[in-house]
Length: 157
Image (cartoon, rainbow, N blue to C red):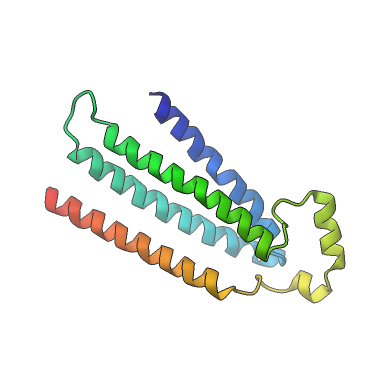
């Protein structure tokens, strides 16, 4: 029961940093709705895939004392990946965003004051090709994983 409660709390707290960081990453506030919409769609897609995957794993696990072990292994593995992503986000922030996600309000205001009007009111930040390719690869991996889970689930029922 304790891992399930901790997992639920982690899921609830997982969204907070993203919700707080999106306005920092979008310099033109007119594009804020689009940015939140993109984040929400990716977040909902991941939740849907994870729900189907955990359901398929749970359906294949025999009932008994260890009936939740396989699902817990999956959730622990995903949380380990989340910890790794935390380091990647920090590195990305320092390398490409000049620490804007970790800057204090005072430092962020100083950064905004040094920006030109065009930089401040421009569209979304310029794309970084490497990051775009990694994002496309992760999206494809998620779609393939969802398809494989669906196929496995279909063959089992």
